[in-house]
Image (cartoon, rainbow, N blue to C red):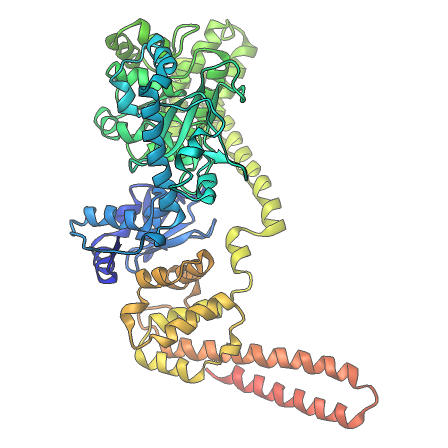
Length: 602
């Protein structure tokens, strides 16, 4: 099913791109644009620019760019059609569809459909006679029958290709392999004889699976195996259970973060609904930033063993780096969230939540239990650990609050702590520079790599063709020589714009992004429409025609200089041929005169 271009334009006009993107990252007004930290990659310095006027965004760090539709597609791992539906719903615009051939369904849609049908297949298998052992295992673990359909739990048969045989006639081998549920030229099932946990995206679609080992003779010995990353699944951006928990997290004001699938299911089963888990990976910066859309506090409830506590320590760092509140629930020794809630009640667990510790008190308790706060060496080590965490915070007001807090609690002068904080902040800055400098020196950032051969004049040319007056556009059409354009991607854009100058409705940001699917081309478009650094003659009384003349003159000068270099090479090769030598010298003289004339043009 497809939506008409006019309806797409209507939706784009109705929604505010700044409002939409602000749900994923904080944006602040910066001149005519809005700036924030890029939601597509981890960064400390904001380099993500959004133009409310033009409806486009661009990251000057990773090069990601697009309009409101591509943003929803990339952030939520959904198709163009789904992005349209999401934004139409926000704008209260009814959609009208028309049919498209079934063969036009792209691979992303196919992957979603494979996972949807796979979830149903695994669930049906669990509920069949073949799933009796898996159901008994869940019963032993205390999982009630009503949780099975709620979380879509399933079971994969033990045969090497039962899943493939089930779906080989419905989907291509290429798409089945791309789903990560089968592998190889002679396809075999990835998951065999395992308890299956569907991993659901924020938008409510199955995108992957986690699988728990049930049999000792499993061909893979790992207790848990997860889907590989695919076009619809990025484990660093996907949290298990979040699609169910979003509303409860907002209501409670905090999210309980656990490690395992069964930890989460057990808590939900016992009435603790505001809970999420990382899916098959350690907590990432992107996970934290996703959770920040719903709350400012993350309550960590990891296993009480050494591995769980090390993971909790790393999670605290990530949470503080994102200026969120990190709290920790300390479970009794040997317990995990699943085992604790099964032995106790919802009230008992909620009492633990009410007694959750700040990161300072949590780490302080560990030092105290080890008897290390009673020695100068132990207290110094503790203070340096806390200082290193406070230095992770970007907000100076929060840093100041915590400095005063630990000074008061542990009877240490602020005048001692503050220089140590400054040292740590400086160390973090130097470390970041050391990490970034080699990459920048070797390859440049993504922006530089993609556009090393795109001149600022070409970017400006696109901007003027799309966003200037009729006189300027006509001047450019009369004087532009396509041989001036050195980048083929830029040439595609300019050619399309020139052919459609009389149809300005085709030259909006939305339509340009719809026309060009290539990410590099889209990035050039974003820079042309968004990057104020490329404005030649900025100001309220901007003279577009003057800008255009400067651009054309610059192109002409580049062209003449290029020809001059070629003639200089011919001069060296002329040898004793006096006539040829004199002819070439005259050509250089003519070029120099042309360059001088162009330089004198104001």
